[in-house]
Image (cartoon, rainbow, N blue to C red; front, side, top):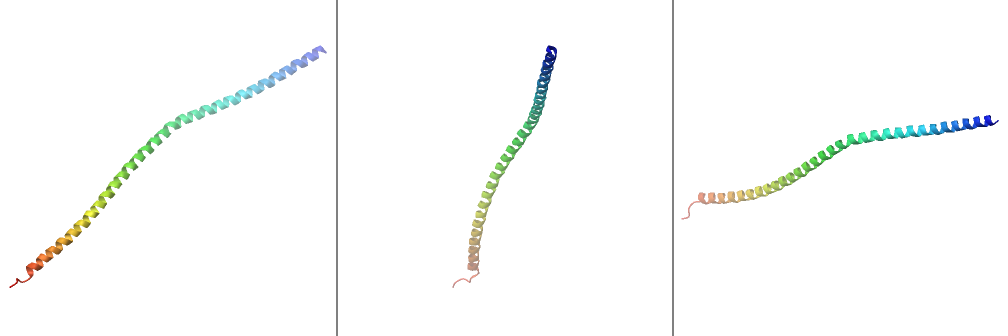
Length: 114
């Protein structure tokens, strides 16, 4: 009877040890899987970081180009407005000169006074 009780106790201990070992093995497998996933995520992030930096640099260069072109456009618009004003002034002067020339021509064509 003592032998049967001892055998039963040893069997229970082995079952408990096997169950504990099985739980420990599954926990280790879960940890290994998580470590693999973390490693892959880290590798992906180290590959993506330079691409993001290059994209940000390109965007900054484009922003600078747009700012420069905006300044140039504003300058061209100011020059265009100035040229339009100059053209209006020259047209007015041309009209005045044309009238004066016509007046001089009429004076020359009129018969002399006696």
